Length: 397
Figure 1 (cartoon, helix red, strand yellow):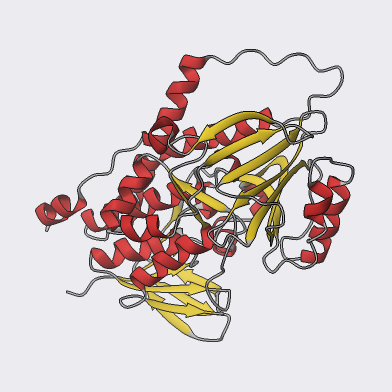
Figure 2 (figure 1 turned 45 degrees about the vertical axis):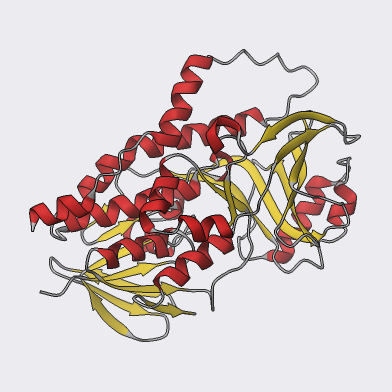
């Protein structure tokens, strides 16, 4: 008997990762992506702890490491550029503030696509327009007009997931804005950024400005964050996003004006709210969500990529171990992932809180409970088991 037909929506990181494992366990996989091709660049993402093991089990450790940013560490600086703190990539066994596997989102996406494209059908410049399901199959109508039937559908289409809205309800029900916005874009490296990330944080206003190195030493990545409790800019309206960034970063010192001077010339501008997705269930019938569409922990957790990689491994493995029964497979996936997701979402909220504007009359922050914090970080980095599905699937077949 041939494997199930599985449609995956989204070709960033979670989608191709799921495609790898679904195909490994015998499924026929189609990935649909609304963009006309892979999206290059993007912010730097990290793999820590158990996520590195997921990469190793995919056989992609050499390819991922070859595409790393090669960042040596990070400095926090004051408005005059004086170094306040130093973080190294080999701190905490490579699982610290700067991970030893740090890679641009687009570069990781390319590695995952190259790994799967020969055995997986990729359909770009299209999306799911309508979907209906019965006890046996899912009937999908694409925006291009085509109709196909699948056994299972995986939504890996990000924070603004169209599939989530279609199957589970409006985004307002699940997306929780954390009151912060982030922006990234590449600039000419006139700032002489080498292998060290530089981060300036203005405690009084809660804003930050920074630069990080890229593999192309002639370019650097600009990074901004600012409080945005009233964030209401459409994630597709780039002109409005740039206007908002200029407005909110006005008057910030350090190198900020020089970095902003390149805003209109950059080829890869990105700005969005810092948000989390919180859902009681990640599946409905034969449809399941993965990655940011299901459980975004926000970029402030530093673990969105790890959640996607680990989630893809567990989702495909639990389905295959359950002989592709969606009810049993999805239940196993949710049971194994839930605590790991909750720990990383708590880390994300904590980091946002630490960036809150201090204000002139603010009380000093209480000292953290270091024992509890250490336990939380361990849960967020390593707090999930990766079963040996090859053994489980063989023994259940």
